[in-house]
Length: 130
Image (cartoon, rainbow, N blue to C red):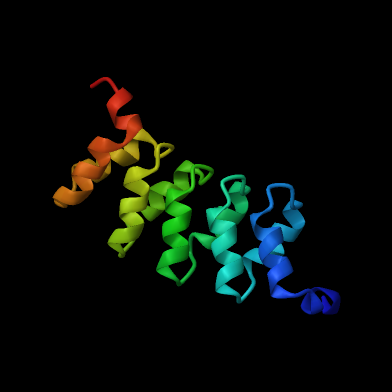
């Protein structure tokens, strides 16, 4: 652990956005205090689902929004984020082409017209036969 502490944050940021970083390192990075490391993890489209699930609970709305927009985010995490208290996260889920249809339908049936419009613009919605 002491060795890990002397690695510069900039190097950890590179590891967080690298699609070839081993899962064991990604799990450690998910618990890092640096916003920028967690931001790179959340925005990495090759991120492992386990790490996306971990950081989907991040206190920072921007990290949760990046997880909501990430096409590698697991369906159950997208469903959870679709009920987030922050509209930016819900909007991210509505625009994610990997959001499951059952989540999109639930979001469409909510009172928020802006979210409805985003759901209707989702490519998955356009391909669904009602």
